[in-house]
Image (cartoon, rainbow, N blue to C red; front, side, top):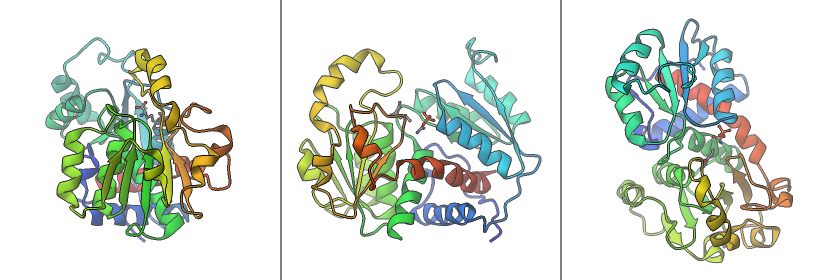
Length: 307
Ligand code: CP
Ligand code: NVA
């Protein structure tokens, strides 16, 4: 299969920058790439990486993805560029987009990504913000397609904090027609604008459930997913959250309430024996390390679409 750039995709700041159809075809390309049945050439193209938060998977999978496609990456470390000094985004974006062909940015505020997108003449990719982690969702749904072959009959239950990862799962699930259930303690529900957007995209009454009841959420699920209780930047709330979230841990006992063919996902990095037990991460139903590998394949497909 030869893949060409999709002129309709300018930036990838949110899952909703793609249609369900586009996500489906991007995932098919990623699966093809994994089987090495795809021909994409980004020779001479340069991806700039701006990471204001730590990263192992996103950073390395983007670097390897670009290298596999024949392109290169530049690490634009905020501490050794003028970004850390506070140069305005509108200046940085206009300069960097004259050098690079695409920028992947990990930062705090979604509005900063939007500001980059406003001023950059080249595509901006959200490599995680406080609001969304759309590149993660592409790999997650790729893993689901590999396992179940389609999305329509899949119920994905996310147990934990209504955070960036949960938000992107909600939006991507709405676009692809999967049923999404979120189980979280009171006060830790996903962002209301995300919930409303998902309802706009998919108004089937059972397409999205937000509950405080873990058993209700996990009962009969095909995918059981979790993430850290305290995201990067929330370190000061960790002691409180560890207590509030105690009942929201994925254990073997809880997994027994899911469908017998259920798989377990976690975006990683994990706090073993907090949001998920050691034995569940490493159990037969876990696809966590396939999911991590799929970051690289999904991002190759994304780069081929966007660059
Ligand atoms: N899942 C994920 O984004 O991992 P990193 O923080 O290591 O990039
Ligand atoms: N919710 C986590 C995801 C890490 C990949 C965070 O933002 O820290």
